[in-house]
Length: 135
Image 1 (cartoon, rainbow, N blue to C red):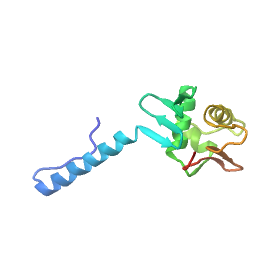
Image 2 (spheres, helix red, strand yellow):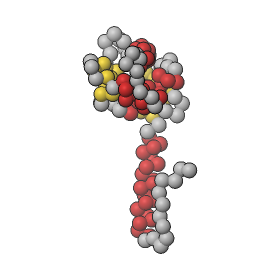
Image 3 (cartoon, helix red, strand yellow):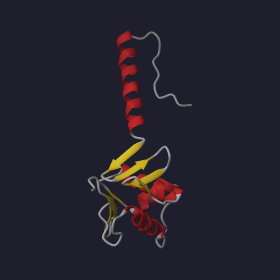
Image 4 (tube, rainbow, N blue to C red):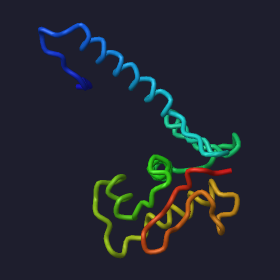
């Protein structure tokens, strides 16, 4: 129901204080995590918007979820199977190329030159890499 900690009685006041500080730190991290910045690309999780230099990118909700998955795993190669499991909870069929179609549409929205991507890079035979550092 939302609880993430439990402190049984009797407890030490120092233990209670340490746990409260931990909860406050987690809350501060969660608030700052609502906006992800990668160079000129801003991903606002609250409003489900992606912006390049302040200009709103036209993405469907699924494409936004996919972009968020890439941004969360920035700097790591994510396979199609991993992405499909993360977004839909299903295994990717051998012939299913829907991720590729969505990636090309995301590139059209966020890349300066979609044919020569700098943000969302294909790693042949492995998947996709979302660049941590971007201009």
